[in-house]
Length: 296
Ligand SMILES: [Zn+2]
Image 1 (spheres, protein in one colour):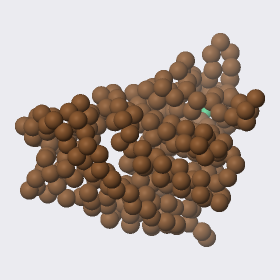
Image 2 (cartoon, helix red, strand yellow; image 1 turned 180 degrees about the horizontal axis):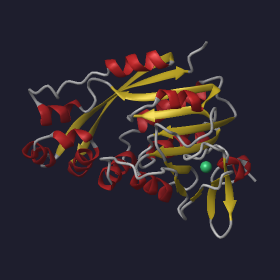
Image 3 (cartoon, helix red, strand yellow; image 1 turned 90 degrees about the horizontal axis):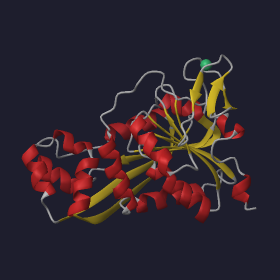
């Protein structure tokens, strides 16, 4: 038996204890009858779907991120668009002295789950780390897709302002190109834990901005405010920048246009012109912020 067979990955009694009831905040336990569910001591019960995700959102969530956006993002991920990012994030974990042995990690705002599952693969198979991975998103569509494709991880629909997890559960919280809730992140972080937030830099998808918004105020982008807020809420430990380019063919351009919220405000003629291109070089320009709980 390999060491991975003995670890609490997937839904089981041990991994279920990271969750807390989104209604009354009591700890959740795994209940196994004809199917699996999470139940709290007051009897609030949430079924785990046959694909292995649980919906812990008391009310339906609103998001503009739909199935088409998520499937396009998944296809771009499978085609390696984010591979350098995943490798860099894995190195950060593998090289962090406090993150050895068994790591519990959360991807807050995981969407369709590609980033978390690729990180999980890198860390557990290549880095030799033992990992419990939990992905949360407000979009049921995203979580459904994630659970279908990556059953070895735990997936839940949840609200970032009221995260359905017990306090101090996670050694790493990833927050990749997604909104934050710093008070919840601080609550969820273990003592040695680290928050790793990925934000766009000024040149992120600059070619698409140029095509969509040339000579308008939407063309420029700055992440100063996001960085300031992160520094204000957490101890900023390190910052790394990552920039690379990829050339996309027409099919992948189509998925890029589907994937990015930039398309929501672009003029239809400019969108169509972009979709008609045979190839497009795009820049991925990201900043990785690493933070710990504020001391004192
Ligand atoms: Zn409850």
